Image (cartoon, rainbow, N blue to C red; front, side):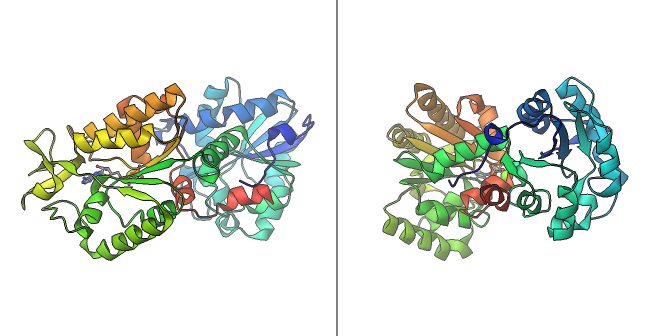
Length: 398
Ligand code: ADP
Ligand code: MG
């Protein structure tokens, strides 16, 4: 994985100004924080530094103000939410650079926690402008990045600043990187990947990267239809990207060369309409009628996939196997997720999952807590699955 420093390496922080990049891009409703998951994720790092006497200065973006001040995207709106989770007061500093920031920081004492205004109010943030990164670095003595979810972007507060101050991974970042390393960086083989979701087109890079890394690639969801079509299956009215059949064939070829077994469903659940609890049929993939849609993987295939997982040591999962929001097309996703959870509890499988709908599906199956690690990082998780470098992480290793 390449080595990075953590809070274990940070040394004495008493009275030091520590700039901590966190994810405070929380959903709001009626002017209040609607979901504090991201705030809670940053707490171990914030508490640890505060308890050790650091002046904790939180850096974050909020919304997309595109380089200009916008009161509706001020981080002052999340102060109460942060204070609620922390259990004591939090200061707000109305700028993240310059005299406005420095004056606010000057009145703080060791142990204090403050939120600095939205980094994206400055155009230099998203441009990763060296002058902006210099100005950020002037506000603190040390830098901690605890926002894996922003690490796929080379911005001033995620990348530039890490080259200007001693830089460390926070606890949430550390946990995420360790889990991802155990899943794809340096995994125990055999490794299985489940890739599902609606479309091949959104996950071509994921599939191409995975065939070179994993021993078993399980393809489900709408995107399996394109692979089935490439194999000559008539998928009827199913969601299918016929223009990507060549891409699917290239992925089959790459898998062959790399010794990766691709698993496609051989039975499927079909319906004539996409609505809750319509009449359905469970059929062999060669028996889909012209007016039917494939909406889930069938039970026989799920059983075979469970056997694949039983023989694997590592699982990485992105994308549901079926249209899981609409019953009964959640059945395959729920069943395979439960198998993965049970194997994880038994200690025979390391399971790492991510993706907005995937996380929702695992919660729906009631097994999110049983997986070894569930990433809520969204775009950064997907770029990691694509094998792309993550600038915010690489800067910590430099
Ligand atoms: P994630 O957010 O975890 O990365 P995606 O956004 O790629 O996952 O895919 C999730 C979507 O794929 C869900 O909305 C689900 O309904 C849809 N989906 C899965 N299987 C099918 C299918 N057979 N036909 C149509 N849509 C599907
Ligand atoms: Mg999604």
